[in-house]
Length: 198
Image (tube, rainbow, N blue to C red; front, top):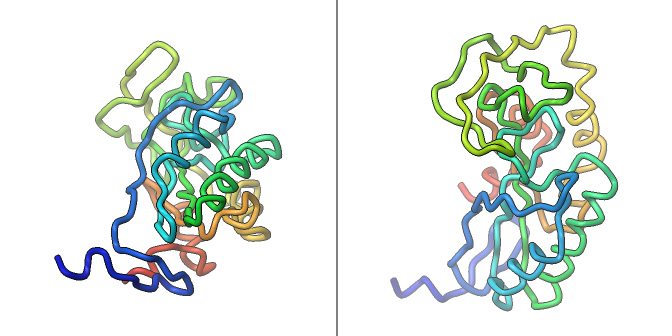
């Protein structure tokens, strides 16, 4: 307990204490999955000088959604919205890591572009619920993503080219997925938070 309020390093980042705000799926984005002023205020209220926050799950593509109103990071307007959040945190002397997310099979057709089946490594339905405009709905059976489709996954190419953390001004991105897809690729690209905190 004596170390709790002492400085430490997380990779290249120095923090003033060891209390970190864990990611919370809040589902308060504006229409279009836009990060907004309410979110900027939320994170600003919770940061301390030299502290670290890990932002909520942030889908890297429309196809990666499993929760309605989760803030995305797959278009320029969303990136601008996240910049407001990161600027608010930095203005108070804190750091924020952005959690990149693709839910894979843990989604529902109502959350997918054109009501398509979710994509996953295999066509095996998960048990549980996604959260749509109408509340909880059972996960849909996904469609197995074919090997030939992988190069066309724009969200993967974008994060290979420009780390999501840099796009929005956050200090680092970390990748969370309920399958291997984008996260395995992000880990290989060495843009994964967890390599710094081991």
